[in-house]
Image (cartoon, rainbow, N blue to C red; front, side, top):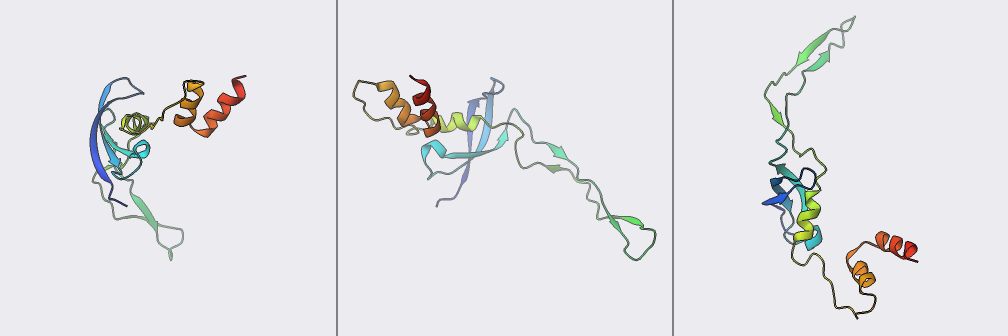
Length: 132
């Protein structure tokens, strides 16, 4: 298994219909349709900055319970993920060369054969049930 790398791509966001620059965690040796795994940064969604709340502790041998502040660190923290639906991953994976390997068909019933080769079994089941 190869090491996962971070790659930068420019893609049109399916949610906001604007061009975004995204940093994606990529598996270089993975299947083309599953090569891009997770969005780590997006130009349309800046990272959320938050300050962790102060922790409170209680003295165990004092009645009534007396509280005190534990190690307050007021430095700002950044969230590790992007807060969106990450639909751009599907766009990036579909754009990879070799993502959809479509073989030759006979010329008869091409649409069903193409759907079988490119869609999931659940979608194909729906097509077969409702195509009559």
